[in-house]
Length: 367
Image (tube, rainbow, N blue to C red):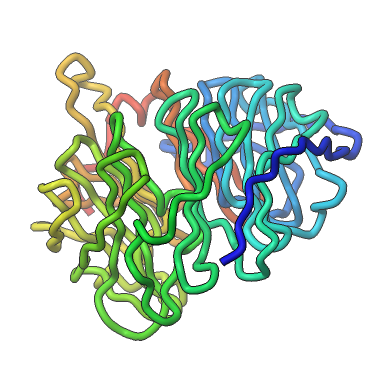
């Protein structure tokens, strides 16, 4: 396997940035939708706060708002106009980092609100395909790609994405034939606390899905079976989230069967070592994104609720065990900001923010 860290900095020019005004409207009592003036399929989303959010997706699309969705900046990196950009992390309105899904396999960073982008990592193998990128704090992050020369490619940064080091393949479990990640929402990779990280997998021959788990910040990994979520050519784990070091939820299913609510969710109570089916109702179909967010009614207690989304709608759960319909509006990805605001993005340039009333958890409790 030939891997190298790009040490030279390449400034990638960008097309003239355009601003489009949005005609915000309440799609329902849960989501406030915005007109982004793009038809791109948006699968990467970084919520900074109630005013600032970045999203990325097909045809090299990167969009950003700094005024709560009233207007949207369109950033197009010249040499990447036709590539999928599905992974994104943003620190603020000026600084963000993205990873491409496909060739060229690049990680690029901007510190001037998308005017210029610098290449921070490149892998020239035709097999490289970034599925996810996450940061646990301002400096430490991981990104992973489909297998290169038979081993999952994992890269690590400790300087805010300015440089990336390849994790030794000998520390990563062997991949099964056809097994890989899904770049559906930039959330099949999850990081928690100072050292924990998980990567959800799917694809390949029929059988139970697997995930890889690290307890040392991504340097060494162990393999764990996730029986409640089946894997296959179009199925597996698409998203992982944890509310604590022990309690986590994985969602997925088969993206060719978006209404099927079997084999689409798993719960762990031991940090991802073992997984079981939830005890109550499942989400209503294939789900590509899940997260745990503070409860608006009990923020002082630290209690969290769960949200998940897919093409045919969104669901919520008070405990990860019993799931209820949240909205018929579907998305590919949801993201929560430190200030409690919750954003979602999906097909045909769809972006929305959860309404204040819904964030206070005046949520439906029955189907």
